[in-house]
Amino acid sequence: MKFGMNLLLWSGNIGEEHYPILENLKAMGYDGVEVPLFEYDVDHCAKLGKQLDELGLERTAVTVRNAEDNPISPSAPIRANGVALNKQALDCCQALGATFLCGPYHSALGEFSGTGPTDEEKAWGIESMQLVAEHAQVCDVTLAVEYLNRFECYFLTSAIDAANFIDAVNHPNCRMMYDTFHANIEEKSVAEAIRACQQQTVHVHISENDRSTPGNGLVRWDETFNTLKETGYDGWMVVEAFGLALPELVAATKIWRRMYESEEQLAKDALKFMKSEWAKRG
Image 1: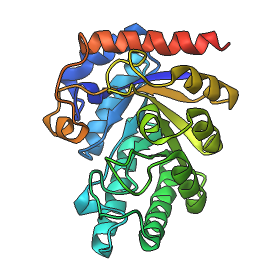
Image 2: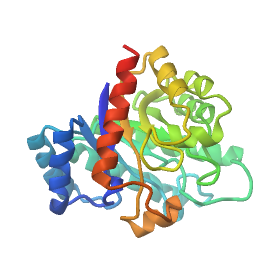
Image 3: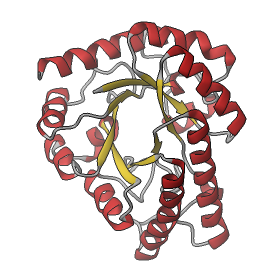
Image 4: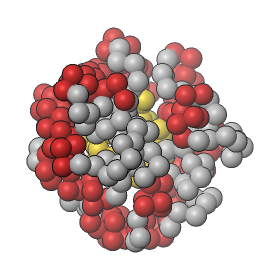
């Protein structure tokens, strides 16, 4: 098992000013970090990758898509733009040394049609992701497609939705991730959800129901860890928590108040929680 920290708690664009944070996370005992990719600067990513190498921190990455680059849009140029930007994100992963690209880049974040996904949208989504997966193979990166809750998207909103989508894309570099926050909203049974997507899951986000410190809220942690152990999961567990550092992310995640002592304390407590819970299960 590898334990990581999503850097969106601090910034959407990691630069030299954040290097002390990276050093601190390494000193805490994290195996790696999850780097947000919203600006696709390959040279910047290569520089950051060298710094992470020096610190001995492995890395994964996360990106999203928006209305103007929606891979399931009825507009072919917009779909093509989404595919192109996802490929640029993969180029950045390669420069960064990131092994997984996770996130809801299957469709536009926060965009709704007023209905569920149509057959056409499903077909467009599969076709778009197949093109991205081919480039992921060239970059030696695995896609970890993330389903969201119904309030953030309408295309993939459950574990079985995501698993079926991955099966339809049918590419070895296209897999999925499981996020405890979204599952807490959408799934009737945490155990059944994890089992339903166990063959496709390569990445896990550890996130509390209020997006603050994991272990201090209402997520069904015993069921979560028990079932991950039962199904033989042995990949990344990455803490995903949000604060008030990024105004644009505050609006997207609806975080209006501070819910932890400090980012450093959250990171320390989250790592201790993950490691202790996993150790209990042998």
